[in-house]
Image (tube, rainbow, N blue to C red):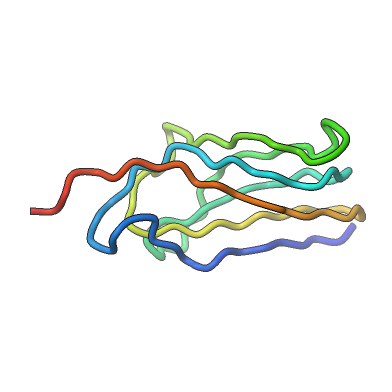
Length: 108
């Protein structure tokens, strides 16, 4: 098995002085025998929070699935980055990820 991953750059979904409440991310992937594990970091702090895992052989063709942010994990911040990882011998590819979020109140 080969462990591999992809990490996004840190993104600011809103203005840099405005927090967002992160709701979920919709993912599109190619089918694979691998399990995709998803984590995220908020505001550049090196703590990984889990978005859960998804077995990418659920259907033929592209996989579309929703990964909600857990109520027991941090859900709000100004910046966010993601890391997707697998361990296995199968080809895997992420085609798209769409982050859904709500801006929080404007700063005073």
